[in-house]
Length: 408
Length: 229
Ligand SMILES: Nc1ncnc2c1ncn2[C@@H]1O[C@H](COP(=O)(O)OP(=O)(O)OP(=O)(O)O)[C@@H](O)[C@H]1O
Ligand SMILES: [Mg+2]
Image (cartoon, rainbow over all chains, first blue to last red; front, side, top):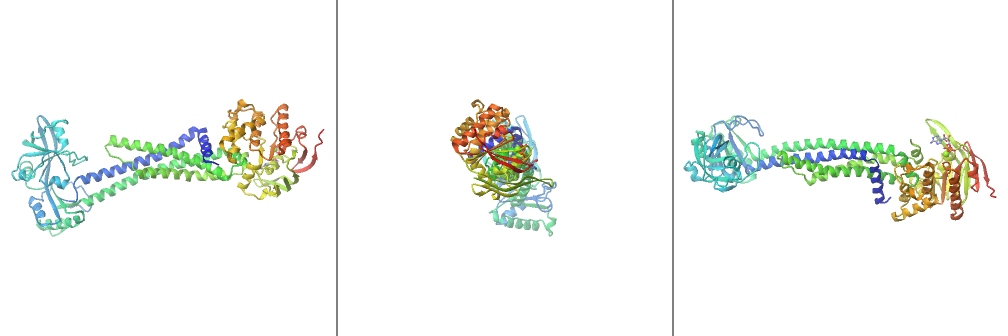
């Protein structure tokens, strides 16, 4: 039997029973679409978490006040509020540890900000000149805080773009040189940072940067730090750096037992790794839910094919009677099954892609439909067609023509 | 050349064995026009299915052109049906939701005839079978019994088989069209030297053949030449 004939036979067989073919295709469409959509959402979540972590800076070891709460990334409530880190600790790390390329101490707090009648409540970060380098931040307009600003406890501020928009309106171009009031104290705006994107807590676009000395003296009113970010010379030395910083700080704080440390220390590589574990699990979970619906769709195909074989027993008998071989019958039913999955697969990929697009648009999550997931979904749908079509096809092909023709 | 030697066909329905053919032997030479006659249930269709390579005997031999059909595989039987035999079923067996033309072209699909030639061949066959041209694109389940019969005949003729087997081909036709169909067979037999075997239980119909084999309860009771006037 020639290929064109095969397709013609298949097409007419499927068209004869439009509604049943349609429903079977729908099963596959749902299966494939959910695989594509869920995997892309999973990957989108993974990418977004990874890029958020990357956006924090590269090769960072972060020290925070408060006790270490077991291994892994635990967001403990007490952390950051404890008062155990000082500028002297930061200086010591900078001076004594060679693996530390940059040390950036900071203190943060939420304050009411007003400017020209508008007001907002946001995070104010007291930091040093090294911040942009350590945290991977670009300046869009003006300049960042300088060492000179720190030494003179200058009342200057650098705004994140979101804060700028909140205070001066989205289209403002002249924020530089304006005055804002943080905790009733006047600050002069000297720069605007570049949009970094990112979401959730600690959005780098929704921050106000002021000199560390100014923040300690006028805003926090004490000399403690909320974070020391240390940039390692390279990725390989991060673990060593972490160990050395731990040893140094334990020594400086006179703590003999490391489990009683009054600070916690995070390694960015660990954060990335554990975040990846979480998102991988998420993707796997979503993928397996989608996989189950794909199998259900496949069973739908098998069911339809079996019904079709039973219903068309006389037709099969006739085809065999006029000279169709087993292979011809086999091919015909297999092609029908594959055609169903192929159509379902194509529509499903398109639909899944639309869903992913919708999620990107409405849930603000950059989903990504990867080629691998398309190939995977397509491969799986073809495989389902073959596997679930094979058995009914073989059953049809083996029928004895006379018995098949007698079938009622 | 057909040689049937002591063919037995036993049906097994839920453990109850029934001998539909009880050791049948005969020969039919190429170019013969033979009628098989017998009452209902005598085993005519059963014999025809064996002759048409649609079924195999339970025991005995069936040689078609020297080849023992009883020993062939499923696919080899399919090849024989495709290349040598045109079968007209007692119950037509048309594809219900396909057009007349598609029904008649179906054997050509499996025979590997190029697409361009199929339609022409099918139309010629339908003409031979005497079907009105206006019905070509009707669905076969919208036809009358007589029209279906003609489509079934056309389908049997379409691939120019050397052996034509017809199971009650005139059973659904009025006398006039019945005569037309029988004279078509006679023409095919005389002009194209095709072997024709037809089943009937009517003496008048059988009289169109050159030889009549009488069968009763699965055995041959009489095998006679027809004296043509
Ligand atoms: N598949 C089968 N299973 C069991 N018994 C069968 C089967 N086919 C035929 N028979 C039996 O074999 C006998 C002969 O059947 P067959 O169809 O050959 O009769 P027939 O001579 O063609 O009759 P008719 O003139 O009514 O068509 C019948 O008694 C029938 O019941
Ligand atoms: Mg019969």
